[in-house]
Image (cartoon, rainbow, N blue to C red; front, side, top):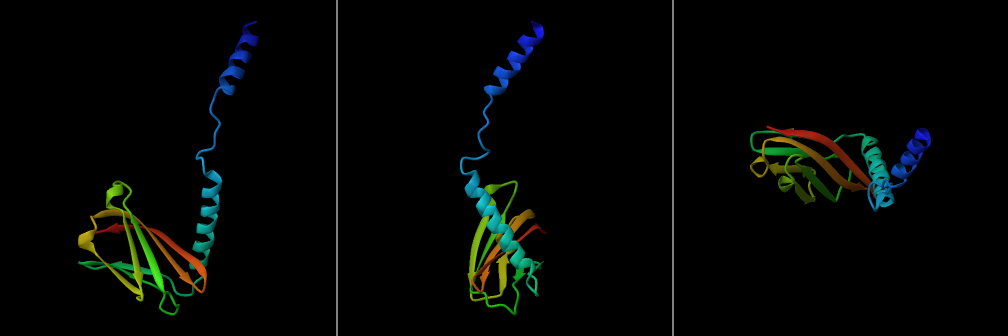
Length: 130
């Protein structure tokens, strides 16, 4: 009888657990993630790569010079402080300069979204602002 009681306890305990998906819009997020993978693959296939450097005053992002890029969206995410996140848009230039006075020292995650020939591109990396 003890064994049967244990089995019944397990059945009722496991049936009462919440088995909902991680997020209510899980499938939508999965599709967005798939789009990110395709955009990252498009960026990796470019002959010329994005170059990121820093000097005393600026974070410098050099986009591929050979490609026609109309607009660029740069997202800088500060993992330990959401209030310091930045979302910047640039048009008509391939050398993007972000003043370091607008950034705090430390780690950022950078995402660069751009379009070349109707194909979405995405560059992602970790970045340390000195």
